[in-house]
Image (cartoon, rainbow, N blue to C red):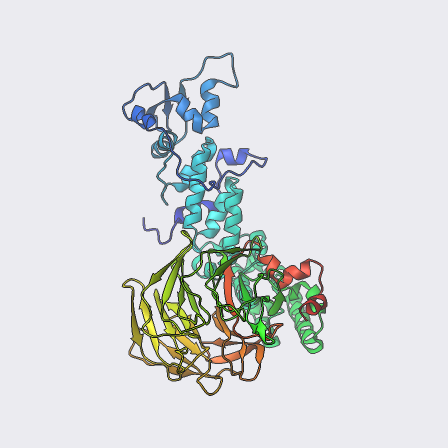
Length: 621
């Protein structure tokens, strides 16, 4: 049978509501054992497999559901299964002789796989057998196989099967797998709506649990509205009674009245007087909130921002005539900048920043006196800074990117000369290595990764501002030129977005720029102009979030600024976002996704701690 998506069998079984006798029998919660500890592969004595293969010293028999018999060693099977230990030792009826035989309802292939684990610690798990393996491993208390099955399901989880895996885990009390599954559903909700055939089969309770969650990862509540429509329209006559309850899950703080008006035109909503009135009241609240600019809306659930999946960290920079160690966090769901107390001990500017494996790495920079070859690492979960291996060279005005879990530091200024050297950091070894140098000396340039190649543009070589650009092929360890930009740019930002590179802003040797240009590699095209920014700037920070390119801070030619704007590549237009609390240039930013403590870094988290919106404004101000 053709199975169009991964783990289709699991998805179907879980959605059917079927449940084994052992699952129905268990009423009380048991300790979750579904997640393997962080250890290496289990090592079992090789002689066990040898004895099994040669049928030597066997002292018991296990029969599967069709009567097939397997000769076994009772001690070995008892070691991995409390069920078989109790059966073979007669621990319940001690006056009886020990059993040497066991009859099971396990299919032959599954029993073979379970015995493989008992004798070797290994078990072949596939999409076809994982459901049955987990079912019978749970029933016969072979906890090691339960753990391996859950690890397999976690590794295979995708938007198409996550709901089925989540429901399936619930049948076998795999609470850790359920927790991970719930997070996956919330973090990948947009893809799930497109890819999952199970979404429309959710119960109202399950759907409400998802839509109400603060960590639901949607860039606009319009997505939540479309999700409601999709679920209700699947069985409209039966499900329309839940419409008002579902509408109340939406957070409408980031919607305009025209968007709410458009939603209100849905025919099912128009036919329900309560729903219709609710939308009218929401529009009135939105209008009042915008006109009065009060904080009252934050006490209303409909105005409660969600917790962002991506947390933006803005670190360091040049402000008020000197470097700073100031850190701000941007909550994109609330469009708010929040201060952080996790500052590093040493202020620095003109450094590089990137995130890797949930950690933030700060590379090189300048403190007003010293040019750094150091790299510092910040853990957003533990709130701790630590020192990493030093680079070969000090690098101020350095260009930093991350690719394939390696950090690349390119060019920069060491206090004497502009450099073309490049080095790469391996976090597993905590070690830097020198790789092929660039074709040009560059400081104050900008780099980005696109399609497994590193691109760097512009900069200053000590004599002139540059318009040249080059590309590093990681596979061949070689640099080559790509077409020049239309404008020379130092203090520029290069951003990779979808299939294109965007070089934005900078200094051309005479003035700070508002212009930007776009280049599509592997095509015959040249750099082409895009719509200009609202504010001229150089030495600013750039990041992509929610399919927008965010431009943060910088120097406008006369002063450092805190203005933030973002570019929509689809519409080729610029829009305003909230400004930072501090004017600064030569800062760096990075995004860390899926933090387990993302609430700590969110506006909602600050409100939940008892702070009012006004309190937060005073703290930031």
